[in-house]
Each structure stands twice: as C-alpha cells, then as structure tokens.
Length: 262
Image (cartoon, rainbow, N blue to C red):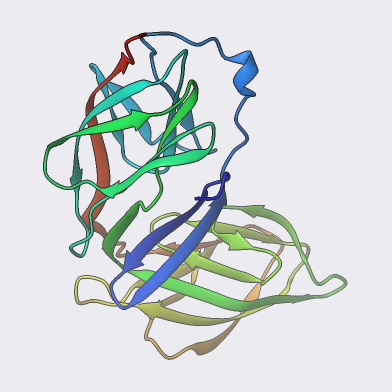
C-alpha cells in the first residue's frame, strides 16, 4: 500500500452519485511522538465536522479519520470492531506501521482482529470507504447571471451552496441569498430531482415579495425576473432529506501486547 492514504467520500442519492475526494492530512513526525508499551490511540480527523468520536475504550468512526499511536517494540495489536454495511459492503479497515501496510480487511460482524506488528513505530488505523445513501429533494439553479443598469455582478452572497466559478447553486435544505449590485434582470436555469416521490418547490423572494414559486422538473426551465438591489433569497418550500443507510466502523476496544524479549 502507498505510504499516503487518499480518501474518497461517496454520498449516494437515489438516481445519482456524488463523489468528494480528500487528501489525507499530514501527520506529525514519528520522532516527535513518544512511544509507549501500552499505547493510547489519538484521533486524527479530516478538516470539517468531527466524525471520529471516542466511546469508552474505543472509537466510533462515522466518517474518514485515523487513530494513531506509537509503540516501542514489535508485538500484537488486538482490535475489537464491527461495522455497518451499505449496499452489502462493509467498512474497510487499514492498519499500518511506519506507513507500511500490515492489515487490510472488511469489518461487518463483531470480530476480534489480531494484527502482527513486526517493528516499533507509529501505528495508524484508518477507515477510508465511508459512504451514505439518502433520499433527498434537490433543486439546481444553473447559468445564473445578472444584468444591471450599470453593473453585472452580485455585491454579496450568503450560503455555502453557491459555486461562483460555475455560477451555480444546489439547494437541499439551506437557503441561498444573492445581492445584486443594482436593479436589473436576474436569469437562471431551474431544474430539480424528486425525493420521497415529489419534486422540490422553489421560492425566489426579495424584500418580502415573492418573485417566483415553481415546482421543478428534471427538465431545466429558463427563468428571468426583474429585481432591485436588495437581497434575493432562494429557498425550497418542501425540503426532504432522509438518511437511508450509512456505512460506519465501530472499534470497541484496542490493546497492544508487546513481543516478549528472549
């Protein structure tokens, strides 16, 4: 296995698959981490929401993350773990020492895994095939443009669902607010993906006045509305976002047995 893990996050919606890729974070040098005959593993998360949680003597890995410890000698790493499957595939657990793979396997039912650690060094336990499946309503605003009296841009944006480079917004349950630089014409293409048997209903409003209320379809429609320089808010009137399945790894206990000296 390569010395650098690359994690690929998969979030599966009904009828569509979205992929997110993350580069593994840099670890501290092994020389700066003291070794221990009875190591205590520490959590290394990816940036963003914390998905690895300490639970009693173990850890719940609800997303990408690593457990790291340093041992002073060869020995046996004992891992008690189980996993939740998605589409018949369980979480893959990877164990390495000094970035050299010493175990890789699928974890589903509760099991005890004994891993031979051939030399002292930094042990990493990683979970990298996290995925979830959701039934969700999604509205897409694409080719968003603004033509003003003397300017053609937005002076303000509020919402993480806006992609300025692509002039595109994807709405699930968080509103988007765009503030035109002046009065003018706001144009976009609108489409949607059904969730729970119904398509998203989109509302576009400005200053307490509804500019547009429309049920989306899979086929994009072209929309153009007159606006002032006040903030324009895009919302879903009937949001639906239900988790159907979630692949996770649960480590209930970790212990290390040093190899007896001869």
